[in-house]
Image (cartoon, rainbow, N blue to C red; front, side, top):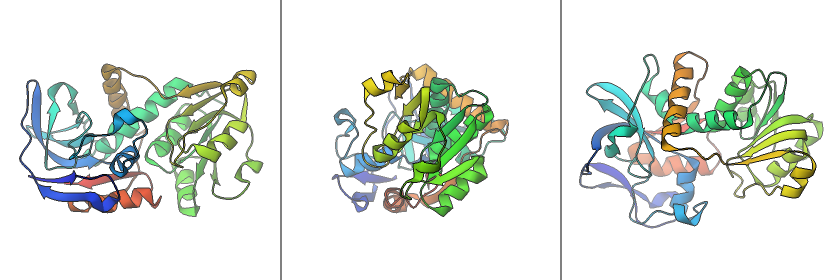
Length: 305
């Protein structure tokens, strides 16, 4: 089968399309034909040798890709791969992790919701935005951010979306943000009102400025570091202002499945729409990684097998 293999950490061109043997299923595993593979920002970090945490670095050679969609007995399914193996024509997955795609949800949308949908749903549940509250969403035009806009609006909150550039701020507004702000503009936070909840997917200076906008008793959820550095928020300052810091959301495998199923159900009901900004064929996985790293992408990026 064809697969994209990484044999050395480094730039996107280190991803190479190669013929490899078909993976062999073990006990309680199944081999599925992959139609669509998910790409995450973390996978670009893993490829570059900059794993967010040392234990995440894969052993080489490796086929990256932790989420795929395909068909089983003609029925569309999505599933995780256990951390690797998704950038390939076939993948071995746990039979217990297969999730049927609800009727009316395109397979591409289901794959786009596999990782980002469960993440966004978990973040919303952990912070609990309420009707009338104001929510600030960083990286609002990204895969997770674009879903957070919709989920926060569905919860009755007012949404301020932060994004880089006119194209991305326009998308944030289209998705339902009441206000869209370009955080690459100097002093972007000067005209932003106080907020109750911050969803921090950027980190660095943007996260620090967003923290300063929180009202006493607010909540800040940090889940990403698109800037290259995680948020550095002093615990004592947060405590002084009564702010709850949510650093990651710990969930069990069963909860992961329920979160994914919840996101898919919201999509089937027409209340949640993933933004698939760009797709690439399997042979151009390196181009997909380069596009994500250049910050040229909006929404979700997928590989079409």
